[in-house]
Image (cartoon, rainbow, N blue to C red; front, side):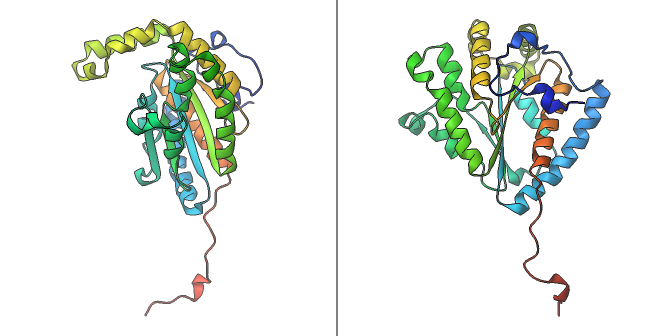
Length: 270
């Protein structure tokens, strides 16, 4: 039986269409009860794996979260990292470039935010904005953003060869689900602050964004930095699937605490 990772992987070098994926689907999980139980198991195991990653101190993990507005990036981070030691996790949210960021190339600020060895890094949006919103709104000429897919692949390959394990998640919700979530933000006073008129403007470009996501994942899902499409209409499944893939990826790293530097059995305290 194929794993969740295999079911949700954007296979490198193969064409695909988002239209063939159900954002309300729950591949590899039979029920909400099962998903929540496995999420709890994964959270507990990730705590152990994080400790081993830190103890080893030689490699790092980067989880990239991308998605349309109201796609659930914040909720995913809050739930999946709930059992981790905050000292070993860095979360970076990328907004529009500002200040010194605009004085450098588009990958400069991303490189600055990479997790140190022994750490887990999480990106809420990322360098992919430079082939998503930049493409949709023509912020730079086509001949500029077209080159960025290859540049990103080389960048991620360098990071992987330097010891960073990269996992990229596209949180995929339907247009109707986005509308529902926007309406909830308007109706709930405690969520009003999350609503922006700009969200409505971006919603008008839904089709262009879906095409941009498809191209980015098709061109940039590689063996060293794979993309996974996470059906996101059901929050419980989204959280479970991301935790499952993160756990499986870290399990495959064969993390181990380093051996003692001396024979500890001969140590005594006066």
